[in-house]
Image (cartoon, rainbow, N blue to C red):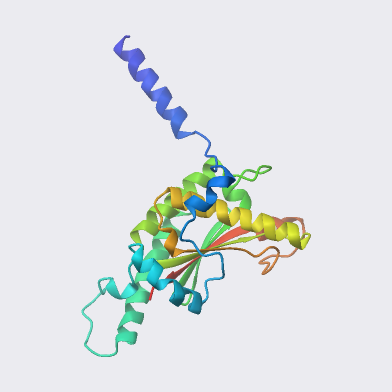
Length: 225
């Protein structure tokens, strides 16, 4: 094979594999990928109960993170809070700077950081699976989550207003698919809370445009204490 043909072939293979469509693994295997995840709301009591499992799976608490400046001896809770604020602010900035795409937003709520992913920004339009663009977005998120690993995360799926049973099933399906993807990209499942909330908590009107926004995944990140 001529050298020029060899490089052409390698370039073609690179472009082809770089654009390959991601497919979620068979549903029957999801429990293996999500072993260690909790299928409940990420309340404070739930995080406290999960902490031993999280630490046993190699997780770390925010108190183990290096302080941004030298801390005075004194109130541990006050010092941990200062560390959390700085840590989560840096996390928010990295997510915001890396996810400048339509249908994706990063918000701050106290020390929590919330990534909102409109369904059509990360999933196929007419198929219940993650799209190629969605896979790229989730890879970016996974890379940042691995760096900021002193956090718990809640992956919550939402739909627009529809029959409640169908809405809950579809919203949980979306949340689980994202959880499986993150698990495949080395995110510790002991950090995860996965829920499907159906049509609850709409963030837009239930008209034709608003429904597209209400179909979404929210990834809420909280300092691990």
